[in-house]
Amino acid sequence: MVDLAFLLVTFFMLTATPTEDTAVVVDTPSSTSDRQLPDKGVLTITIDKNKRVFFSTESQQVKMQALEKVGAKYGQSFSEKQKKQFALLPDFGLPVQQLGAFLNLPGDQRKQVNQPGIPVDSLNNQLAEWVMTSRNANINVLGSAPYIAIKGDGTADVPTVKNVIKILQEKNLNRFYLITDLENKPVASN
Amino acid sequence: MAEIQQSADSGGKGGKKRAKKMSTKIDMTPMVDLAFLLLTFFMLTTTFAKPKVMQISMPVKPDREEEQNELKASDAFTVLLGENNKIFYYEGLMDPNTKLQPTDYTATGIRQILLQRRASRPSTVVMIKAADKANYKNMVDILDEMTITGQKKYALVDISKEDENLIQKSGL
Image (tube, rainbow over all chains, first blue to last red; front, side, top):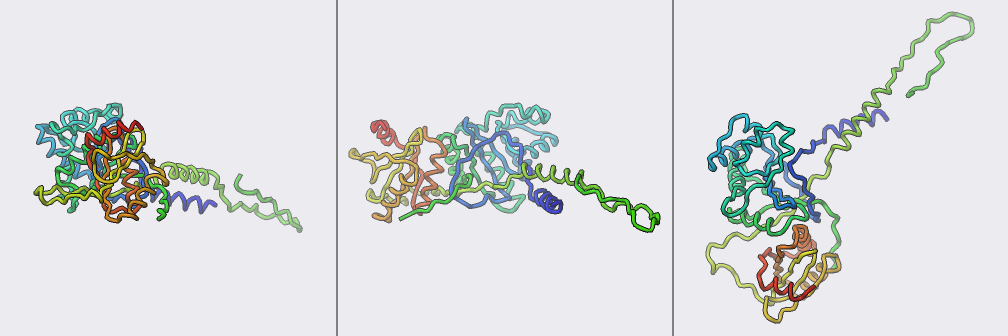
């Protein structure tokens, strides 16, 4: 029994991927699709039920490069320390202008910040910038174009989702993934 | 606790005084406790289910307007997603005589209708129009129905004013 217990401990220790402390929790709808989300090179766009849009990618290098480029575009510069902090963030939903101040906050205070979401309107379309710069950075770092995944809350509203899809289409990104939970496959009868 | 103490005295016959044998067993209780603690911890923190994904491909922006094909009215089948998880459909393209049919997201609702429609007309193209008040789950559900029923040709289309009026007029 003890042997078994240790076996299980080792098993769980090795398979465990610590759940990341994301800024927003979304409840994704379920689908019958059993395709797995790729492990590497995924840009995730999260849409929560309050129409906020968050952006995340797992590679730290990609994040740092993207931050530099997007910052430069909007006239924001970031220190090395801020860049490191940014690379450690699991996701974020702030206009780039507010990012500097946010990164200066200590970790525990950062959690209390109510992030307004990345601006996605046509006048101030920062999401498109983030997606394109991260995509280029991803090609530089990992050598392949990233997969783009949309992780929407089940109760997210359609106009926001459509808007995000439209932004991607405008950038000629026509193939992407919708993140869902697994649901049992029903039998389609003819 | 974990082991049964064996009688240590070897009071055999002969009365010979033997050296008291030390027990070779060590008490494993704390270690086992720890093992189970870790086991429970890892079991509870592990997220097993990696999220699944559903691939969708949007059409590439056409370079020229004339490259787009006209959709035949007889092939068209429109699904409208309304608020409060309502779903409607109509066959053919929009015209003044179009009548909206209500249905639902269950296996006996839209799925059967799609299957019947395809049996009678395999070249059907489904147009999915989500109203602004519908939610994202509805969108995923209907895209999922496309996969379940094996409908190959479908498109996410913006809802038109006429479609919205139709939903309003139907009063469902």
